[in-house]
Image (tube, rainbow, N blue to C red):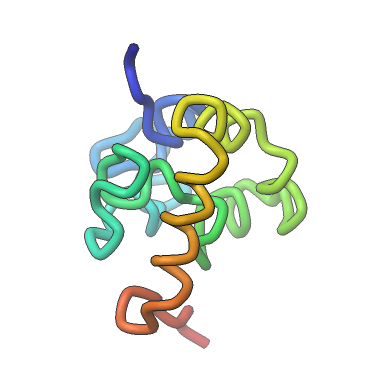
Length: 104
């Protein structure tokens, strides 16, 4: 089974070298290496819904609630199991050194 990262599944083109990178900028999720490997993803690619400044929040304008209703999030939960998702999310959220503040 292929484990897709969010930018591969959503086809947003905002990863480094993506087709919309110049137009919309690189999404922080695709290069946030502090969460590399969580849920089997590259950088923040499989935990994007808890990350500040992800492409769906800012440039794609889906809004904050979109992430919790997102088809990709449900796919990762199905693949990894809810308990594992909760553990990975908890580890990320409880480690302040892994969270970055958004520029003002």
